Length: 144
Image 1: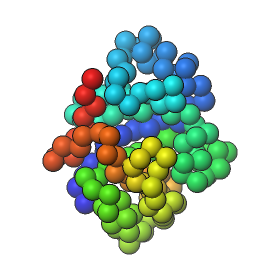
Image 2: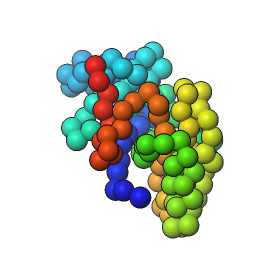
Image 3: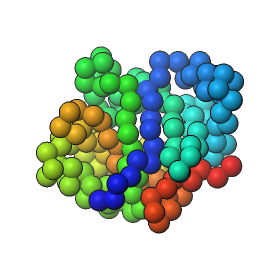
């Protein structure tokens, strides 16, 4: 498994307010590719993507209660090149002492993903996304 953080997804209480904060307040430009009324992506340096997503929906996607204990309001993402790699990475995390929170499965957005928690309970999504380019060295690119 390569050392890689592809996405940092923040579960936000008010998506419009958070988008305004980053876009208007900080002057960041959201990616036109992938951003919608339900999620906002910002291409960061080094190929990392910062995503803003409604906290309730992110907790639901991970299969955790949105009470601050089961779900802490953010998830790190490890994107893979091929669909079958999602299950492989989840199994590797389990063997290393992590907990599979949500097994690999097809998603509503056309990809395949699952979640694991590290020994401290930090949530990681492992995802294959056919809509975004993942370079050979693991950087995520969101072309305009």
